[in-house]
Image (cartoon, rainbow, N blue to C red; front, top):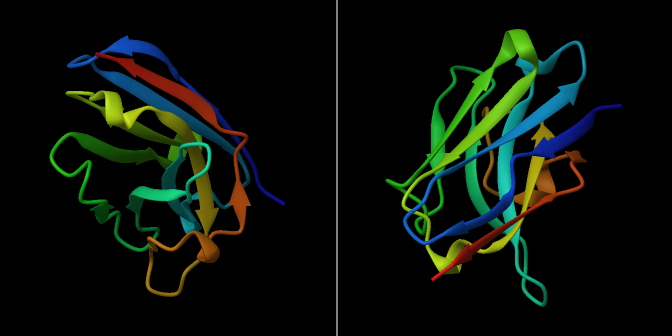
Length: 125
């Protein structure tokens, strides 16, 4: 069983930066792919970013590429999402996820087994 706890959400203005953190309670954190997804009420959960458990490669959704950076610190069982140049359309609940896809990462939420409770990010214009 893996428990994930997100933190760092909040209310910011357009153009600001924010860093989300996700702490995992599992001994084998380094063997999990980690992902960030976001969801606006009434819409499907959208892939934001993922980091491979195999080699640390990173992958991003098109809407955040060049603005967001995912990273992980295995010694602290934590994954981060650095969000720069935030836009009002980035407003959503952000979820951290953990899974073990065979190829190291996934952009498909169905391949993640564990989810955090979510943290709200609101970007005002």
